[in-house]
Image 1 (spheres, helix red, strand yellow):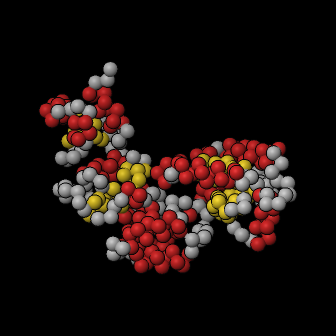
Image 2 (cartoon, one colour):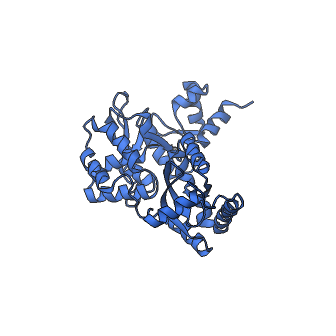
Image 3 (spheres, helix red, strand yellow):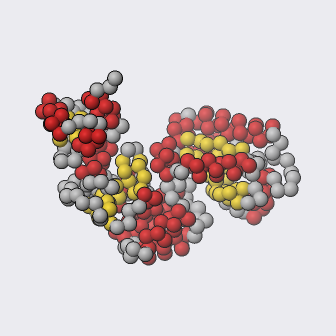
Amino acid sequence: MSTLDDDLYELASRQHGLVTPSDARLLGASRSAIRHRIARGDWVADGPRVLRRTGSPATPAQRLLGAVVDAGPGAHLSHGAAAAWWGLPGFDLLTLDITRPRNITSTATSRARLHRVIDLCAAHVTVLDGIPIVRPERVALELCATLHPARAGRALDNAWSRRLLSGPSTRRVLDELAASGRGGVVWLRTLLDERGDNYVPPATNLEARALEILRDAGMTMRRQVDSGGARWVGRVDLRCVDLPVIAEVQSERYHKALCDVADDARRLAALRAAGFVVVELWDVDVWHHPTIVVEQVAAARRDAVRTDRFRCRSGCPSDQIRSENGRGIG
């Protein structure tokens, strides 16, 4: 049977070495028990809202989580710091910005610039590597409100190319927030109108590397192709030019934070129902195990040939491939 200390250590291991006093009380620790463990040296009171396990590594993630927790309930990393944590170039974690609901009563924090808003809903936030953070679409709006327009536009393109957001997803968040009179609305709408929902930003390094690996193996792929059967399903990362084979290039770091698992499963099922063989290529394999990437796509191609999906027939994927190639789509 686990003890209180075991439970606290286990929770801290999932939270970059940190717990809150309220976490500890939910596990059954009284205020005196918390004070006793601090006096014993097991924990360090890192401010009034954060307990840090003694000896836990001081990582960037621990610093970020400590700042978010210190800002009070409902707080999330935002603005330029959020852009940096999402991996966008040109941003860093030197100065932290935290956004939290205005109706949460809490004292100020000295660890970050605090933004109190009335419109921080659950659909606009997520958790990335254990850090509560605003979603990329909202980050794009925050950057449009605070940065030079050209820099905000580059950040939007970088997020788009990394598949952190899309035209439709950004417009949806923009429409939800426009009525609140937030800054950046006009400029973000201008950027989206200039690009259009079907905008194809420059390929990411990950996608470019996957294309290179497959090209060197003799498999020619096209990137960012509208795909489906009788009905359009979506734009896919890579598609074979000669067979109904689709490869989706996924980042393990971002996938869980961004993806609605049910929606993702429905999309892939719809592509398969339309006659495509779909394979997911993960970033670890693309960068470190290229032979696995080749083997996965080669297996998908064999499956397409074996099931005879590539033969000419009315409405089949191969007909659509030839038609799209003729029109130059994608």
